[in-house]
Length: 256
Image (cartoon, rainbow, N blue to C red; front, side):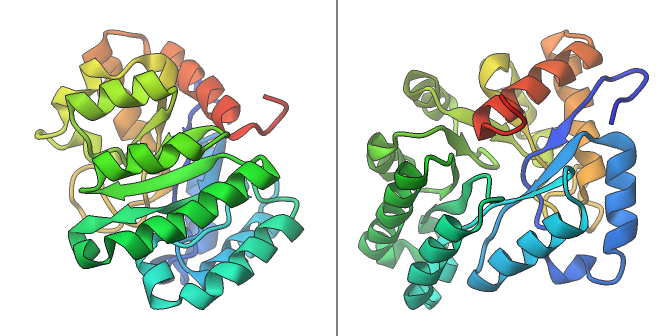
């Protein structure tokens, strides 16, 4: 989808399988299709792997599914990691392994188990040649160390690091995905330090509404684009075309 003033834009991370979208998913997707080129769907729990694939099949060529389990889901049901590995290898429509990673804010006492779980997903991504979509909260030192083993593209989802982490991401050739909370006053300062050629955009719906006004949805990714356009001093259409190309390249779909 193109916008007369702003070109094209992609939400590379939205949890549309969340129960908060159950009653009006068709309307949410309709609004997204009016403004966006595509929406990528991470799997955060074992069950969400099946749900995001079902959404993809309902909206092919617009909703794209991933396979994965977030760090907390892995701690709760480690036995399901085997099933996700099988799922990712069998389902050819999967575009990435994610979201996976390290969560030290909620589970700092389980650092070693988390690193073992993440290691399995890194090995899986390397085996099937799919990019990694990484969740990282208060675990930056360990996440960069663990990701040294990655042989695929790495997307740092809903980036929450600072200047040091931006530099390390640049040095590691990782992509930085900015969620719609980049519109919050305390986060805007980061925009000028992130190079456009590694920048992606997401909403992390239903979380992180750009104005803290309840449920977020993919169409709101435009709010981030407008804010970044303003801070970077670049035309909105040019910005969105750059990020669009970055996103297809990072995820290696549509022939990118």
